[in-house]
Amino acid sequence: MRPFEEDDLEWLISHRANADVAQFLGGLLKQTPEFVEKRMRFYMKCFEEFGFSMCVTSLLETGWPIGVSGLQPLENTGEIEVGYAFDKDHWGKGLATECGIGWLRYGFTEAGLERIVAVCDPENTGSRRVMEKLGMSYEDAAFSYGFPVVRYGVSRADFEERFG
Ligand SMILES: CC(C)(COP(=O)(O)OP(=O)(O)OC[C@H]1O[C@@H](n2cnc3c(N)ncnc32)[C@H](O)[C@@H]1OP(=O)(O)O)[C@@H](O)C(=O)NCCC(=O)NCCS
Image 1 (tube, rainbow, N blue to C red):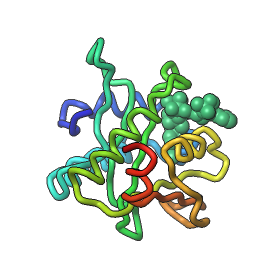
Image 2: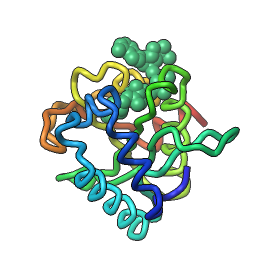
Image 3: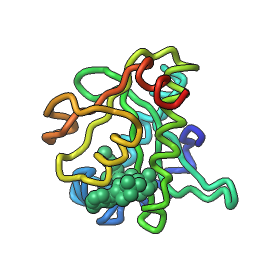
Image 4: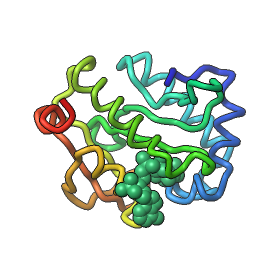
């Protein structure tokens, strides 16, 4: 995983232009090139401010980007959330879980966070399953990024007890 750079915009637009990837990210009507550019600028600003952000995520073997994962402040509340999205060819291989554990470990051990949350569309069964595999527990129904979401969370102590 590495922070976004200017040259990543074209790739990010094409990644989010896939209907399956965009389905639970507000859909293709939301993920326009203009919107995606704004989000990428937000990720870059977030990295400058916090030292972490949503990051370009690539396979070690090829170096090609296959998705986005990372930590960022949750819209509205400022809680730190973990997030992930991959090209469909790479779903179902455990990558979101692998990246999510890495980001939680980074957040708790390097960034000094005490609690990390995650939100998703209530219908996004795959994402909810990833949250469970990350040791996160359901907290409540909330409203984020313009949509109803479910919020999950995990404390540093609970993460360390489960993953060491
Ligand atoms: C959600 C997403 C990140 C999951 O990534 P992934 O790398 O496939 O996740 P993993 O392989 O680590 O784990 C997925 C788990 O969910 C399960 N799962 C996936 N889709 C499911 C579905 N529709 N119904 C039930 N379970 C599902 C898998 O079986 C797996 O659980 P298991 O290991 O117990 O079998 C991926 O589907 C994605 O990129 N979706 C588009 C973007 C997105 O929605 N991101 C989340 C926004 S909050």
